[in-house]
Amino acid sequence: MSKPNFAPLKLFITGPTYIRDDIKQAALLPEFGHRDAENDLRFGPIRENLRKLAGAGDAYEPVLFLGSGSTAMEASIRSLVADGETLLNVSVGAFGDHYYNIAVANGKKAENLKFDYGQAIDMVVLDAKLAELKPEVVSFTHNETSTGVTNDMKAVCALIRKHGAMPLVDGVSIFGGADLDLANSGAAMYSTATQKSLALPAGFGIGFISREAEAKAEKVTNKGHTTDITKQLGRARKNQTLTTPNGTLANQMYVQLERIVSEEGIENRFARHLEMRGMVEKWAEGLDGFEMFAPEGFRSPTVSTVLCPAGVTSAQLKKGVKEALRAQGYLMDPGYGKLNTALEADDRRLVIRVGHMGDITPEMLAEYLVKLEAELKKL
Image (cartoon, rainbow, N blue to C red):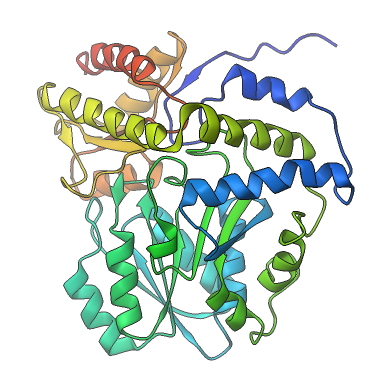
């Protein structure tokens, strides 16, 4: 069989993300039985390091779902929204809408409270909606990947709880890149995944499940099988997965989490992400016609969105800038497709995204921004 001609690209998209060579090599570690003692040697440290990275303490049980962040999110809906209950989903972008669509697809009584693209959750509007709807459960996105907006998770959870509802949080694109202090967040269940800020291949959804959520799930019916968090928790407490895991990814995850916690250091990792956000902010300020899309104070530490000058089209970004950078060995993000389509339809300025999450370094980002700027100036 001939060797495939796959282009080696440096990824500056929002996931999948750049994977270090040593993590790629970890895929060659020995395979193992997932009900054998060897399994515990991987998943025991994995779960402990996930607790540390989340700041979860003993307040949450880490669970690995086979699949993606959407798998964990679906489990939160199936297990924690009972028949007859109302779910309010709060959306600031495409992935907020995704959480709502998952609820609807599972037959849940749900309503979607949407905010304008590029804006964070308006607490006054949310307060009024909670008072009006009186939902039992509220879902929202911590870090909106399509717009680069980070919501204040603790403040939103506190408001939800003031109205007696249970908060479910999608943290897919921020976990591993920012300090969550999950133990003090107020979230009932926090869902994330491997292929974003953890800088691993896709393959596991990750759920941090509180005792409160576990107690409710025991009373909810029709939870499915892999989306039943009570079944998942039974295996997780044995450092196992409910069904056969991706052993290759488990080996990589073990190595990566040990490196993050014991070598780079959790605080250093978070500081690196903040530094890179600052680099993009400074870069955008110095580029004529460009500016940050997300408002100051709500900008993501893992993905930045930048407004382009008026008149720039999706075709120019996709066929011009993206392909020019591909030829130079970079995969550029010309903006989330559905977002730019909507902005273009409303005659609004389009955005590009710069993914700076996971194991991207400031040096790598600086090099990329020089190349990106050169192509953008040709528009």
